[in-house]
Image 1: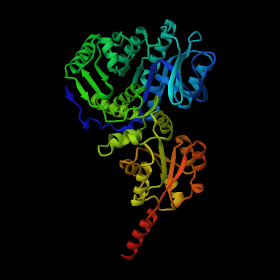
Image 2 (image 1 turned 180 degrees about the vertical axis):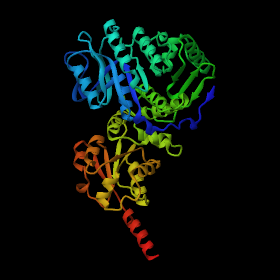
Image 3 (image 1 turned 90 degrees about the horizontal axis):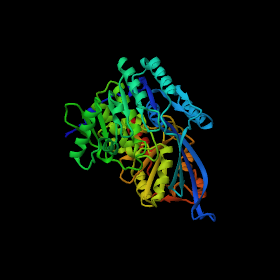
Image 4 (image 1 turned 90 degrees about the vertical axis):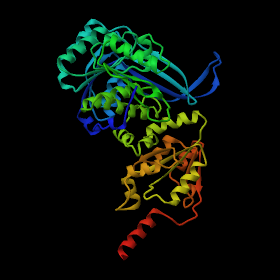
Amino acid sequence: MAMAKKDFMNIDISRFGGCHVLVIGDLMIDEYLWGDVDRISPEAPVQVVSVVRDTRTLGGAGNVVNNLVALGARVAMAGVIGAGNHASVLLEMFKDLNVDTTGLVHDPTRRTTRKTRIIAGHQHVLRVDRETRQEISRVHVDRLVEFVKDRIHEFNIILLSDYGKGLLSEALVQQVLYAAKQDKRPVIIDPKGLNFKKYAGAAAITPNKREASLASGIEIVDDESLTAAGQKLLRGIPVQKMLMTCGKDGMVLFENGKEPYRIEAEVRQVFDVSGAGDTVLAVLGLGLASGGSFRQAAALANVAAGIVVGKVGTATVSTDELRIGLEPSVGGLAVKQKTVSDLALLVDHLRAEGKSIVMTNGCFDLLHIGHIRLLSASKKMGDVLVVAIDDDDSVRVLKGEGRPIIGAQERLRIISALDCVDYVTLFSTNEIKDVIEAIRPDILTKGSNYTTETVLGHDIVERSGGRIALIPITEAVSSTRIINRIKEGESNG
């Protein structure tokens, strides 16, 4: 089995913004009810969950759209939704993303799919599904096909996301594939179910290992059975290519007349694999639409999947994260760099594992021994150290014109390279309290040149049961003094 090389990942990510993508697939709302449990119901031996907040996000094919938009692409969505409040919620979320929804068909007899997850005490205790799996009517098939035929010339690529909820019937899939062939537009499909023959003629399908095993009827237990399953599907459907995703074992690309091509997984800490297939479909599609070869696009999708499984919940990957992940010298550090919203979910997960969270923040412009001692001492106080770094505008406000000396992205990478640091995030001027509120650290550390009362956000930490820890400063060292000494040396020279 041939192995992938890093030099296949040289796609110009900046071209993603010029891509226009049509997504056709099953739409749903992912709901999360977050709460606490402190008693058992008197009515039955079950926990009583006291809900404190709820969140909603796009699920199913909507998560593919989320990933495409996060990477800068223009997106149109086609599918069937119900009527009423939940359909309105879906449309509003698409509107917020500036997605073209003229391809959505309303069916008042059909329920808009909702998956409601109840998270109590940081544990996923229950999921409630409200859905319809019946195939869509012939009338709705015809309306969707008409939309595709009228608009297909506008798109660089078409992505089909099949979640088995009745939209992607064989009749619809085959007519979409025929229209795409007539207009020479590639179609990539994330499949579902046992009947992969309905995808015949697609440029590629992207099943995971379990889906490929079920559809082929071959139990995949080793490389030999994996190869047999992949080749059977490739011949029997048939499709031009198949990219089988294999979790921690990376991906395997099957192409007619060629040896299977393995792409090793990037080494990451895995928190949640949900939605990783959506990321693969989106990035593979954009890689191809941007002019990359299939192997290049697959390698890029592999990097993106490695980043997104390091997040909690159905998540997306940004162009900045992807660029960092592609750099050989710093790619392994990408997993440490998180947005504040990613961290908010991540720390919930870490606390559920019994881990304590320590946080510190600062400019870290020109790293010195004082910074190292602060970070090292902070790490020793808990299990996980999160470092929040001022962005360039924030440093300029705090330190004056001419600062920072080192740009934000470089400072992120430098701090990420330290073994004592687990995660880093960037924040803007006056946002530090929002960051602390999102993370709610068990311990917030600063240097002993502060007092507890002068540490910004001390009230938030203490209100949530945490504490402030002041790290002793034993040497009069600072980035400003070092920079001034350098400037004085230059002027004296």
